[in-house]
Length: 86
Image (cartoon, rainbow, N blue to C red; front, side):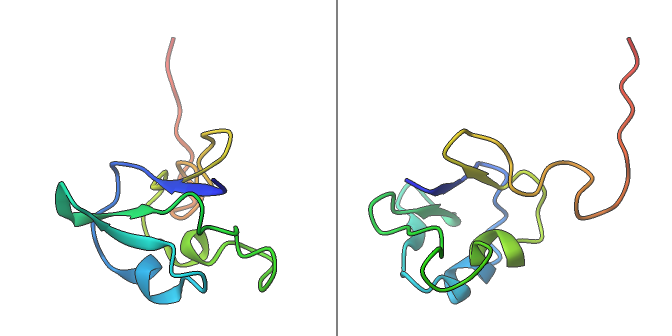
């Protein structure tokens, strides 16, 4: 597995359309959400500098890498910095 789609996916189909490996598919339990086939995903390493699913995804924290780290973490798309109070 290179990347995975979290439950924050809104089902916009963007990743499905750009995946060069055809690794993205509709979740059989929730057709409004997508998943990435772990054996098909190449991380786009052979074709692109960045994973195409994460490059086009409009939702922060919807795609994670092998370490479960969000590729588009909170604030990365909006530019809004979150402040947490103790």
